[in-house]
Amino acid sequence: MNSSEISSESLIRILENNKRLVALGDRKSILDFLLDETIKLARAERGFVIFFSGNDYSLASARNFDGEALKMAQQKFSKTILQQMRSSGKALVLLDAMQDSRLQESKSLLDMALRSILCVPIRLGEEWLGAIYLDNRFQAGAFSENSTQVVSLFADQVALSLKALQNLEQSEAHAQELEVLQRQLARLNENLHDEVQRTRQERDQAMALLDSVPEPTLLPGIIGRSKTLRRTIATIRQLKNAEPTVYIHGESGTGKELMARALHQNSPRAKEPFLAINCAAFSEAILDSELFGHVKGAFTGADRDRTGLFASADRGTIFLDEVGDMPSGMQAKLLRVLQEGEIRPVGSNRNIKVSVRILAASNRDLKTLMTAGSFREDLYYRLNVVRLDLPPLRERVEDIPHLAQHFMRHNSQGIPEALLAMDEAAMEYLIQYPWPGNIRELQNEVERALILGKGHIKVKNLSPHLVTPSTQMDMSHDAGMTEQIQALERRLLVQALETSHGNKKTAAAQLKIPRTKLYQLIKKYQLGYEFGQVNLRKVKQALRKTKGNKSRAAERLGISRRTLYEILNRA
Image (cartoon, rainbow, N blue to C red):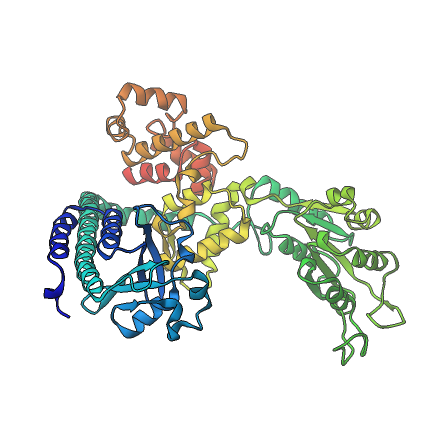
């Protein structure tokens, strides 16, 4: 049958619908109009519009002959019919689905008790967009070949409309992207000239910064000079000729194992083994075997004797990390080692004497665990003969530059020291960040930034969460909204003064505030000494007193290292 057999009334209706489709401006309106008109043209009871994506499909619209949306529509059409239509590549008409031999095995179709079904593809050339699915649950033979032709023609027109709408949406999106890119390009062009001029100066300052920060090693492998770290080191040195059991408390990543090694290396057992184990990493049975060993046949798979860590560390030191997570049964066995100096391998009937110094650590407070009943009181007092509290990195901010430079110099990429550099602005962000992962997180960040910057760390090489506005505020957990707003206000003020080299007029223009307001803010945040009131003579005096250390000199003068470098460069 050809299109000439379609009734004149249907053709007029299709032409009128084509005009309306052109006027519809969004996908939902087109689909609603599509279903309502298709149901009327085909005299169907219900209609569905289904879109394909590969082998998957999605239901876009479902309506009845009254133009109302269908509830639970996903359960009211046959996926078997859709699959057969796609396989055949053409419209599918069922005069009586209940009697069709091809569908007798489709339980869902029989459960829905459908009679007449018409499924027509929405296609644009070889591209399958979806399908129009019509049905009638009460009348067999509801859809004629004429209905198929009418709905197919209408589906073709809808496909063209949807494709045109898709092209329009893509064009609008591309136009918006192009506009954004043009604005970004304009800003980049404005900054490019200044950036080129600053690059050499920043590189020279970065190299000077790297040269000015020696590694302050209080003990081998321990970097820093903060008061809290010095107190910890002083305690370790006082224990040099003693061997008490030491409990090290600190957050994850604060260097508990490093301190344990320092205790071992500063003890009479320094030449003997130092072995470490994380108690939280093993089940009780495996931890028992790891610590005390086992004999052949002690359990399934024990095909030979195994020496445990306590026996291997005899005359040396064993470090029990995360001892607070040790199971209660193992706590009793550890207490016996501390009291009797004996171990018993799993499956053995004899004890073995060992001489081992025990160092324990936890990121959870053992006293709190003891009070809660999850840690033995007698074991707590045995382990807590001497306690070392390691401060988190956020409480020893002055050590961050030294640690960062240490990790740069000892980078895993093998980058020569002569090629290493870090911009002052990047260092400032490292200092401001609270480092919840402590030293370990700082080391990972420096290694990552070195790779991205190919040896020269700039702000753009840092992780995004380090340079978000939140890191520019007061990072104290107790700081209220007022304090955080003031911290951000001060940060923006400092940035404007630094980029304008202390020029008040330029800084006020950057901040878009009157100069009188700028002077008020400078006074409020006591920034006068940092911008303009420290001269070359005072800088040289501070450098002499700090033996040429620029970081300490800047700290002594109450100015940033960047400002100190600018004063020296202007001289």
